[in-house]
Length: 387
Image (tube, rainbow, N blue to C red):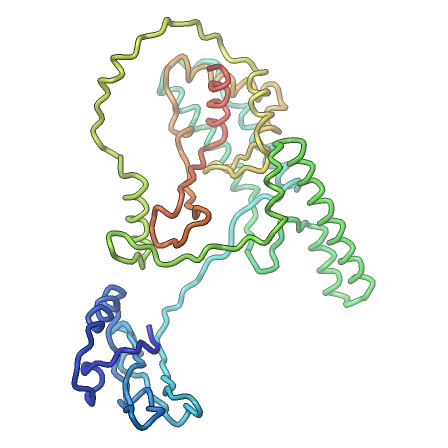
């Protein structure tokens, strides 16, 4: 942390006889970040007076972690200041090598890998025995086997991809092939072929998007993302209990404490006794048509949970009647045994900023989104439609 702090104090300027009221605040802030005031190797004024009534001063400071190799090693160069009244500070700090992983695993839409992914899951579900689930333990075993089928299919077909500044959602294999062809030959005809491929691919992608939004989920406001530029919010260091979260562990503690503040809190459920009990009704087994109706309303572009299964994948799976019947069997057993398997409760949590906040230095300026496994969500939707 370095710059013009505009604070004169005897602590760093021996020619100034006073102490500033802001010094303590500055040093406390630096200490909270694990930093300390770094003395230069050639002490001297960092700002030269521009009139006869003023004096040279030290107001440009550097705060560095004491364990860093650059602590106490920065230098002042008044000969480089030219018309400026401030002296340049030259600082060399040791930086630990950090590898930022910009890769992710994915299966491209409509690719051969996606077809093999769906086929592997279909074969796995067809081999799953769901005809004789008589206990909660049996149901848990079957649900875990279903999770293993998803996991094995994903790891066998997913490809590692890297995020770059050129990454585009509409990019496909044909674009890659035509680009590589041009790079290998340098032929102008291959360049025109590449540009033609990208134009047609982009047009097809967005036409399909518009058609899907207009006809499938009918959420026309999704088109607003293309109308005007989306400005990203200014994100500051998140403060929790008055302290900045500068490590992943601190950030996790702040978010976890904010979003799970009610966990393990005692609950007085006696008010439920005042609710009159309704008569029991007969609950018939689920039908395959109920599942088809429920999934037809689901967006194919939604983000999946830990099992990587999207609504789009699930729609492809239930085309197979036997495969759909296996899922219906599991749902019926969940109702009969009054038990919800662990796989259906497994989730990923994504933290996103709330829109139109003045600042983003508080955990409450963000919203956690829970992404559950899709098979369990489908059964929940069928139950909800029944109720």
